[in-house]
Length: 396
Image (cartoon, rainbow, N blue to C red):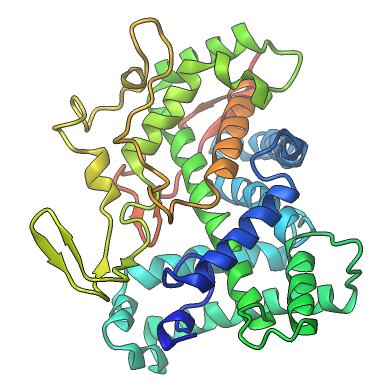
């Protein structure tokens, strides 16, 4: 492997090439083995949702009308899905260490892009400065590293090759098999596993969490849309059972609402930076090999040449004249091409189940006298909504 192949290990930022292809294929195949994109994963998502709903009722009663911060509960529920697939365990919503880790992860994503720390990409030695955000970034990375490496070490000490429990076990089994076969150039190693798990853990938590928080924020700002979604859910699902993925095709307005929030917010507005692996001619431009390319997904989703009134929130734009869902080529919240988000199917499952279950059970509104937060959000590697609280009441 050349220097370029090993300089950014993992799945998200690794250069395109044989190592990336092998690692991505292995991870995608393994995650599907444990339920990615399948109905068998639905109970895992609903388990976390049950906790969210119970805690929302408790916190709402305790708040006395001042509102509830949804972020910690949503983040824990979302993260526990990817943790179940890759780490083989769930974490209690009151687990302080895990809660701190989720906060650190969100903070790391924010300061890595939206602070002087972004200059590390231009002048890497800045990373080692003993002050300010550079020191904070190292601390965040250090804490996450300790957490993940401890889990990998625990898996190694309890590994049963004949009964793998999760992605880490499957990876360790593959690594040992390649070592036994004498493959000297294998990219499968515990160091590479650490980066793969880190990518899955971060990418599988922050993006979906922020998407759910954006959706619920739009529902309190547009109560008429919230009521229309709830009416559709009542008609199709009723109140006696929780929504299922099998209901998705019969809830077009609900799905259109999710898609419109994704279009308006684009939680990864600049996607993930890519690099030209070969010199390429594109529409009269020469893109030299090694050029960093930043896809502007925000621009695509707000382009007035393909969207009517792109700054207006309008779920109906994703419906045809008969009320059926419309698929549009210019709607690409998960990116496109060979490096499209590997967790797209998982994210869609989580967004649908969380949104429909919460809409079915509760009515959300802003606390009395409290204005909505600024809708520009907080920009980091992901676009998070500005902090907000909501009043939550059971639907009668």
